[in-house]
Image 1 (cartoon, rainbow, N blue to C red):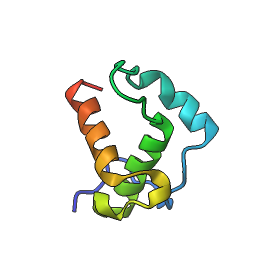
Image 2: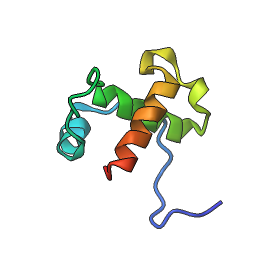
Image 3: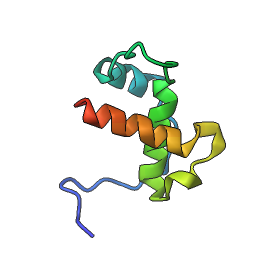
Image 4: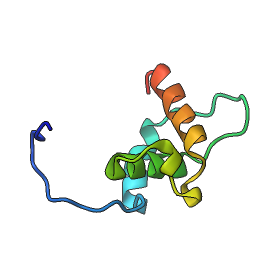
Length: 82
C-alpha cells in the first residue's frame, strides 16, 4: 500500500461541514439542464464515504443515495473534466 506524501491522522468519515461544503461548492459543475439536478453535497458525502470505507458502491448506506446513481454521477463529472 502506498504511503501518503503528508501523513495525516486517521479521521473517520463524517459528512461535509458547512465550511467544507462552502469551500468545495464553487469547483463543482453546474447543472447540465438535462434530467433532475442531483444534490451535489449528498453526492460528495457518498463519494467520500466510499473512499473512507473502501467498500463497494452497493454498500453505500441508503441515506447517502443509491450507489449506482452516485457512481454514475461521479463518472459523468470525471468525463466532463471536473
